[in-house]
Length: 264
Image (cartoon, rainbow, N blue to C red; front, top):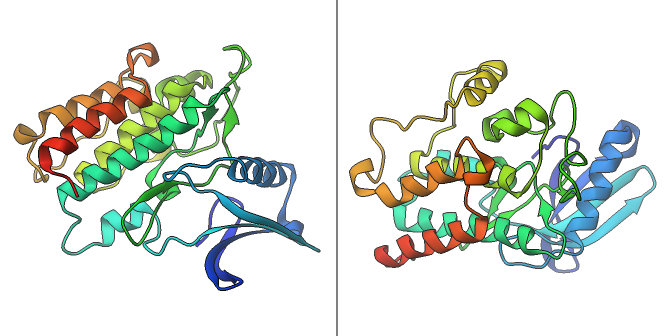
C-alpha cells in the first residue's frame, strides 16, 4: 500500500513475515525525512499490544525502511468496507476498545505523545482482529506550552478526523486525538466514510461550525439500542476540547459496554 511519503511492502525478516515501509531517498525532501525519523524514533520505543512497534530500521544506499509486524487484514478503513457479511457489533466494540487503549497508552507516557493523524486508514487489523495504531509520521511529543503547540497555515493530516481547534488555530493536545478517536468510533458503528461526498473545504467549514458526521438511516445496532456508545462518540467530538474526556475514560466506558455484550 501507499502512504503519504512511503510505499509498504510485504517482506521477510529471517523466517517472519513483516511489513516493510520504504522511503526512497531521491523522493525525500525535508518533510519526508522528518516524517521518517519521527516515525522510526517512536516505533522503536513504543511497546503496547495496540500500538505498532518497529522490528528494525534499514538504511541501504538510496532507501530508508521501517520494518514492523505484518497485519494480514490491512487497515481498518478497508476492513470495515470490504467485509461481507459485516463485522459483527460485539467484535467492533472490542476493536473500539483496542483503538482507545492505544491512544490512552500514548497519552499516559511521562511526556504524552500526540498521534495527530488518527484515522481508520492508519489503524491496522491483525488476523485475530486486534487493532494497532500505526503511521506516526506526524506524531509529536506534547508541547510544553499551548503556543509551542500552535502551528500556522495548512495543517497536515486528513480533515475528516480533525478537531475544530486544529483546523482553525493549529492547536494540538491530547484532546485533538480524542476528537479523532470519536470519529473512528463513529465509523466503527456506521461502517461508512465520514462526510461522504463532501470536499475538504466543505468539511473544514462544517466542523468549525459544529457539524459532525451523521449516522446512516440503517445502522447496526439501531440508535435506540446504542445510546451509551453514542454518548461516548458525542463526548469525544465535543466542540470544546476541555469538555472532551481523556482517552483513559473512553477506554473505561467502552469496556463497560463490552461487558454488557459479552464481547468477543
